Amino acid sequence: MSQHFFNVSSNCGNVEVLVGWDEPLKVFFLTIGVDLEEPYYSTLYEPMWMNQYLTLDYYQGVLEFYEINDISLMPDSELFLQLMDDQKYGRQVLLDRGSISTIDE
Image (cartoon, rainbow, N blue to C red; front, side, top):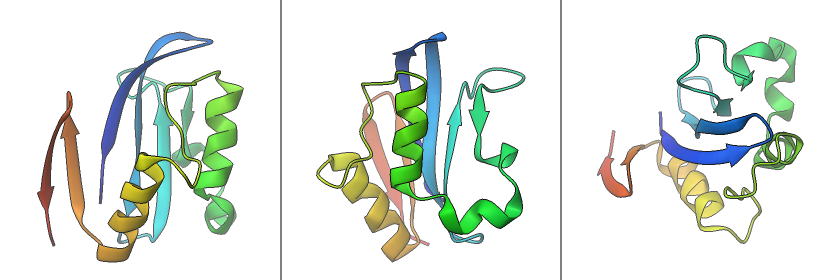
């Protein structure tokens, strides 16, 4: 599972966002308000049948709904390319305040 953390501003105030690839479930995931007891948005809130529709394009719409402009999941963004590599190689990428370490599984 890859995990990319970001501290950004939104229409709910400052929030911590987590986005990544879940290799065992074969889905991308997104959580807005990771540090909250009840996040504003989580992939876990979506019904299981939605998994096939939970694309990066879908999550871009969720980011836009929360007015999160500091993260882009558009195909020309660096994060999009990193997530596609995470999916392709099934690797775990941990981002911690700008430092990146990669653990290949």
